[in-house]
Image 1 (cartoon, rainbow over the protein chains, first blue to last red):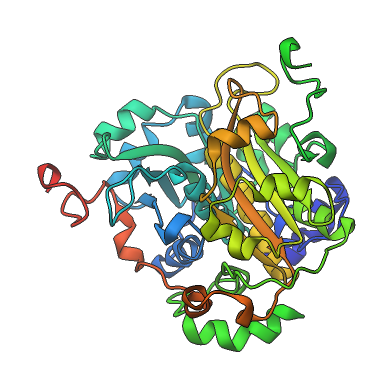
Image 2: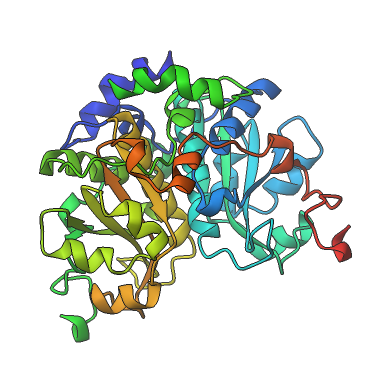
Length: 212
Length: 212
């Protein structure tokens, strides 16, 4: 499986400070894809993973709109992307627009956590894709406004959150030089920069001076 | 491991339509906790999982503020909860407030996906907790306004997203009757209700009449 093949390389580049399931550090946002298709069943396995994410009152506010590479829709989705993303994402097997529902399905009341919960479902897709040896790369570099119109998304009820390019791994040589250099697992802040005990750390250097 | 012990029961209750890593359907939002402590290292393993989530431009907008059961902070956090949550969440080993940064750390520019990305990090915590055999239950039933003040969160820069109660599994008998009945894995919508090809499905029955 791709995961075990990648293990040595990823673990060398990512310093994991506390023992966790390898599923988390093994996932990283590659760009090089082969242009191969994935099967409908493979696609459904990704959405199945999203399906089991937690959400407030089990509201499941996530929605996914996809375009398969070998469909007429693919160019419409690809055209939404900024050129810097399109240059590599055009080799995806599928492009997925990720949308959230602003209100509870059952009551119509505002759903405070619609974006947050949809992020949880998205992470399940990213993890499952990595587990299957696929490339899965989230993007905010696309035309959000045009996405609502082009994909008939009712903007009073739904929020466009992000896009994802998903496909089979490809040869890194097809990437532009700058992206070729970036094609390795990136790092993270240390825990102490984003975890605080008891209260927000007011001496955090990223805070504006008034809060120091 | 707790996971394998739970496997039969969970898989019986949850009908998984497409093959996915068991880490996803095995995670569910239990409430019954034992009141036991968890170690600092166990807590750090949860945040380590969050650490490796993806985010736009690797901005890592998630922040976590925690209160350990055996600390003075615990009552302050617990007091934020609605009574319906406090009744079971008071047996948690740790309460965690989940916060996101509205702007990019480096540039100060608005970060469109701050809530969405923070949801991805939260899901990693929930999955890692489940993997470790812990209870991990997200909540929006608490006083958001008071949380900013009580935990010194600068509201111009940060958004309170959710809270989580995390602890060791406990005896279901300690739960109130209503919650005892709910203490089993819940179900999900079928995929066709939240996945659309090409464009948002305008005949979706959940849409208001103007969009049908």
